Image (tube, rainbow, N blue to C red; front, side, top):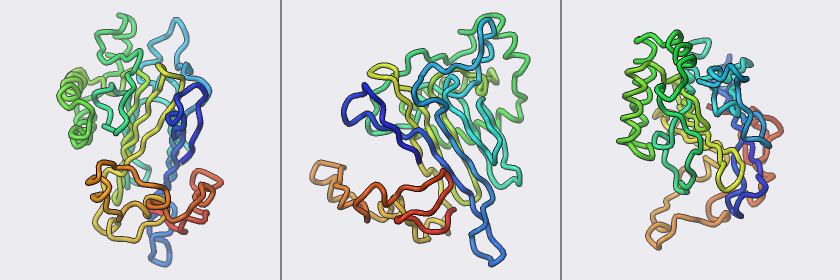
Length: 283
């Protein structure tokens, strides 16, 4: 993960994740899970601007379906994606879904404060010219059903389930889930062994900033039972019941992590596994 500090944001809320790299491993010649199959990278395009945009006047219809209003891009095995997408990995071993969303459909997190500024959630808000363009690109029913089957599993984790279900129902009826504009985006990465849920948000009220939140949303039993390393491995087996019982869910770094310095977890590239707190293998 890449972390960036944003000037002008409140103290303690000025550092956010702006990049995320994931390597999917498979069985190598030795029968062990050591062969790199896929590299997926999610990045903020320009950390210093929240007004990147996609289209150019008078062709604003080009902005619809543009991830994070042009501020978000995904690299899938070297291929850049900047628009909403539902695609399988080249060998069929996984799937990537990315689309712009609204605040109520964003995944809940503990410090929820931000409200999107120019949030566009319905095709009825588009100009007639943009509406005509999008209708010509309308998804067929088979593709939209596949997307909503995946997203249905996420609804219980959203900020406002009822509001989100209503919005999703309209998107399903119109077939325009991949044509939404906005500064909030959801990315789902599903593989045979593990799945990730990524939320991108722009902060435009208190300061100008970008934020990527990443969750492991599904894990196969065999991977779950393995020994995990790094920060996730160190926090995975912890019991937070005692901390919650005394009225706080916060723990000191010394209680939560094995190594005392940030440098112990730093890597030199998005897909590197070489650091003091790393092991030479991934999922």
